Amino acid sequence: MTTSVLVMGGSHFLGRAVALEALRRGWSVTVFNRGKTGRNPDGVRALQGDRTDQDDLVRLAGIGPWDAIIDTSGMSAGVVDLATRTLAESTSRYVYVSTVSVYAGWPMLPLTEDLPTLAEAEPLPDLPADVVVSYGVDKADAEKAARTNLGDALTILRPGVILGPEEYVGRLPWWLNRIKRGGRVLAPGNPDQSIAPVDARDVAAFACDRAEAGRRAEIFNLTAPTNAATMESFLRTCIEVTGSDAALEWVDGGFLLDHGAKQWTELPLWRTYPGTWAVSGVRAQEAGLACRPLSETVADTWSWLSSGETAVDNERAALIGLSEEKEAALLAAWDAR
Image (tube, rainbow, N blue to C red):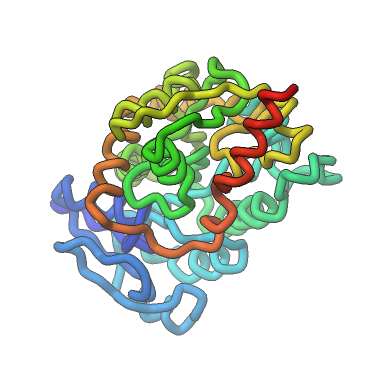
């Protein structure tokens, strides 16, 4: 019997990767989105509607049921509460994609799935000014609503940084385009710093695995294995795949902060807080999460960029990347130190 799945989203990046993976498995795939951004994969049943509109969700529920619902587009507590209440009787498995930002200890502390979220922490932790806590609070509240409405039908996935073709935040595309320009490139912090981003296609495959796993309440962090990649191996792969003549100039992290460089945004994937990449993905890896080498993600993303395709617009993308002028000024200050 063919598995039926409803993807909330489905037209770009992770949602599209989930729909494509489900199609690859021979499933019957329905996607639900507004039809305003991205494109739905060929072969899906595309339903157009607004997930913030209860009437649209009631109509959607009437079209079900599905063996599983995979929710890649629930970005706020109110939206997730409405969807999970309305669709609770339409499936026995609901996979909700959340984020590691829900943890009260992120990005300051090493984390496992057993530690408290921002919805459970009282008072809220005192975090540095450049850690935006509102996003994590909203997603933690969304998880809480989903648990209330779905009980043991709910799987929660908490990815760290997701990269790959069609990435709309722009972290990896920025590095690839900067490296391609060549010349002397500011490389931030410690070249041996471990990083653990995960490919959207691997998140999609694991989400589909959990959709088939049977009815049970479960939570998984989704990060690559520890020490699978470093900042240096990542940047050197960018040089290799772009064919660039770029020369990496490693600049001390403390120096960069003292001179006004913004970690995480201006220099993507670089962050000095010790818990940033210390999120354990062991539980998911033991349950079958298979993470492709970061070098493959980099190469495939460059192929996608080189094809002329572009990601959907997203307001977060405007914050990503260091201007040429600021990079030159930082390198000049580094030389003169």
